[in-house]
Length: 77
Image (cartoon, rainbow, N blue to C red; front, side):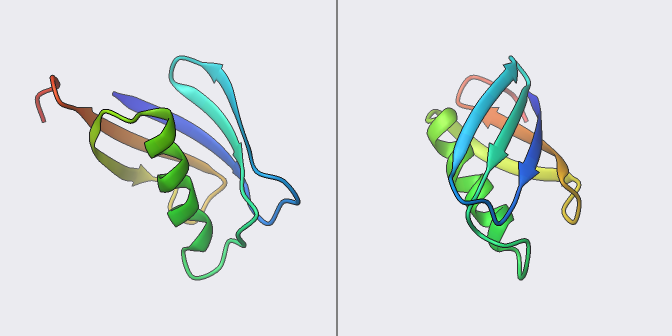
């Protein structure tokens, strides 16, 4: 399943807002330097999708709009 995430780095508070089944807005306190914000987004996605076998960033590594592919136990790769 593909998930789009709009990221707000270097925020005062962390939050996750679900826009639709495949779209989120996530605010993280980590800066967008040295991959810190991306690492935190991976951590937050693991809490949203606890049964995920693999979470892969497929687009937007250096952008505020990111595309992730999430594989769950019953999903073929």
